[in-house]
Image (cartoon, rainbow, N blue to C red; front, side):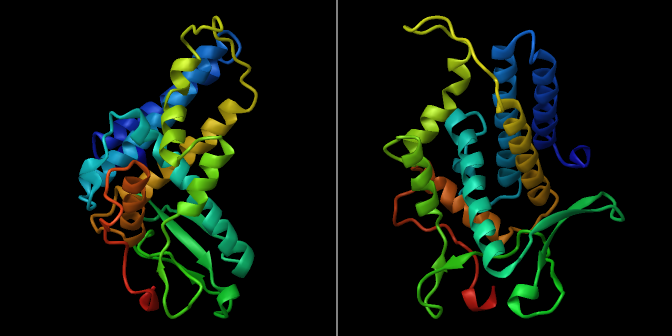
Length: 253
């Protein structure tokens, strides 16, 4: 499916997979380089997403730099926040979100499916077309909902890492690759991989799936545009009052 997408995004996605393969090969003989490869795989997968956002002309995407390590690290943290929101919705109404490959299409595409039983719609499936063409609204008053900005989720990430802000957390995270290779005042780095490689494999899979939900579609999908606005705020690339168009009317979503 990656090979059916456009360059340069597809080459970044291919490179991500190659780095994971190299990391697995080095797991025993050179754990530090295996960790470096696995972290680089995440950045390459994130680069593919940024290329796709820019290629499809999402508003504000030109401010995302595919060569900036902090920008690339922001993608995985936003995806974790999104995963949390969908997890809450799943618990509340049993949406059971899942991806399915449309094998009959040429080229093949990913489809997002949501179960509608919890919404009182029987055993129907909700299938957004294109797959991320919806918006997420939240609020205490059902008649006065606003686009969800993921601020609470991202602040929790920062607090959990003892960082002053989500941007400070991203900058620290972006430096992890250097820490596994370069000596410091404490000495020469050594690393115990533990679950790092498996965690990075899962993360890269999510990032590449995201890429495949965006790149094949010329339409500017509502949720993708909403998330671009969140990314720009995370990275302090927008004044707080500058509002990227988040989507559509909540009543129509």
